[in-house]
Image (tube, rainbow, N blue to C red; front, side, top):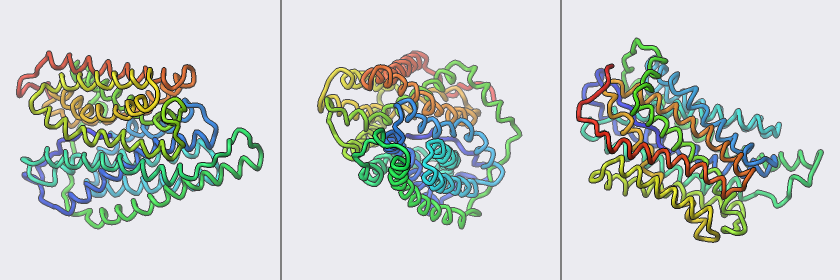
Length: 432
């Protein structure tokens, strides 16, 4: 999943700073936070089995994670203004490390609530790093190649979301016992949960070590860039932008898109395990999650070429129609066709986030940075839509649950068609 690129204030740095070594670090950041976010899709079936959760309860994993975007995005932006890009990136990385380390007490107590808290702290760090990474990659180089650098950085994000689920399936789901925890009680159940939770803990401890090393390298370079200028504005002033129809509709689109994307990714393992779909075990189904996120990686390159020649609003409506069609196939068909139709939705998702963002921001002008902060907060859709999808899955089954993401895509398609009919002249902008 990508985050909206922000436009940094380069007044203090002229036309950008050519620091190739820092660009490499930023690419690494995109890879790491993209990969860790996609690990949630592997963690959900693990904890669902471990704590015998319903789908709605298991989706609280995504709620705990994506709620951080709502609460942390704007404070993180303020932190950048006060201590600078590199120091804030280091703070975000160490917060991510703290979140990974919190998996230790969560494992020792075998408490689902403790796992949720660890995920929230981890996501708070990721949100902070993302708030830094997007404007920083724009800053590190000449303005003429900013779009190219952002696209390249987003490719690293997609690479992380493709690789991490495959490796995570091996590490986290590969040892999943065939024992049904519902048949256990008392000490036997506690020992079983402790043994299975230890696998999750060891995975995140490994991530903590790797993140700490990256944080140390970033901290050593904390003085390489000047601090951005401090703006004398209130954080809440940005919400006035929601009164602007185009931006408000687009922010809703981001909310629904992230919610639909995350909900589908969260259900893939359970869906593919069904006997009338692919009938796979947990590890095999988990490995296929990489195809869902890998589709977004491939689709990003295809979409970049198509968007040069076709109206973005029409392209957005088209891929939404494609996603709805694939969800319809997945919900009505069986076997390989149904399984791979659901995985192929990732290909349709590829250009949605940046296209919705660009369409929503067309009239913002000098307030584009404020709008980007609101867009970051709209990612909280990933905390709300998945639990609702889980409730629907509990009540009517996994196939019927796909109707909610389909509805989200239908609303996003209407935004695309609406935006295509309302072309914004070059230079048009609402007042600062």
